[in-house]
Image 1: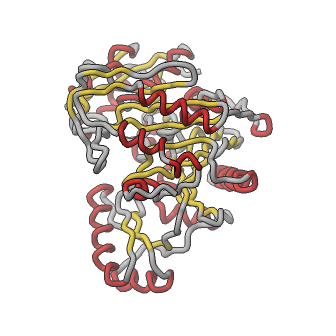
Image 2 (image 1 turned 30 degrees about the vertical axis):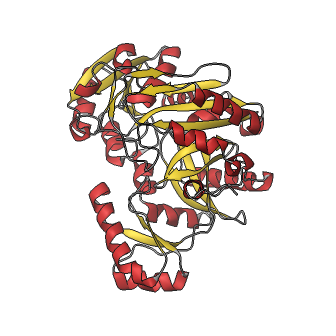
Length: 448
């Protein structure tokens, strides 16, 4: 077992990692920016070290500083959480070069699979279907040719992208040139890489993912699928597991494809293989997120398995003790992301939490990074907390979520709880017959 871990992150995910580390007797070392100096994380960590001012480039994205602090504090390993440096291959590589254990996959795997164009090639070579589309586009003329070949609607995507950045849906040929330029510009600004490609846009798509764990002996375990189709700006808001859309056959196919990919690339530690599934339940590989996902608690709630513990054990060199054919799960879990944002337009709404009271009770879990009096900063993602519930079945889980939302108190800033209440009371969500267009339909007043 590792002796100590430096947590290279902040907020709820850093506290989540810290909680498991302490339970395992692993020293938890936190880092913080100036604005997080009074945070719960700093108070709870075994040791907390300042790394810079509020701007991410000067703190949580400062590789040199984080590596230096890890070595000075004699940390055995670094856990990146998600976001910030979690999927930066150069960060994992620096850890390896400095003799620090990176709690995640090998840097070469992150480099290889972090590029969407290359990851599509890997999936294709392993016999896993991908959405019809192009390779990297070199010109507007080439983009127009592919758009005509695929037929509209189509979507541009950033090769180095994530979080929906650089994605542009196009309905007609007259829009292709502007969309190509816009997607490339957004990709360059966000990732320093303007490469884009084009895909056929699937109608009524579902975003479904498979959690994986892999050890250093080549063993891979896959978990029940997570339905992640409630999204705004291509970013998830509500997730549930299992999916109300899948069949036993589809679930098996998704897990087998995820395992084939993981074994084919020699994947170690925790990751998530993401798929898009069309209305006819045909699935296509999207990408693999080489880190712990925001929505990992719903998998933990239905299986009783602590995924962060598994990450730490794998990073320590232990073989997986889990056996896929013995993996059991029960009930239904749903996660709501509680954001500091305006429910009408989903724009961030930073500010001070004048009051903050979390719901509690049987089957309710809240992973949070804030307390009353804290400030949700403009410099970071506006995620305040993750509200997770478990129920014996889907209907009971929805009722428990509604009750928990009714008892969640946040004042001082705008938040998305009003939207979440509306979502869970809608017949379209209750039916389970929703796709990635759910939010737009809800805003238009549609309920079927």
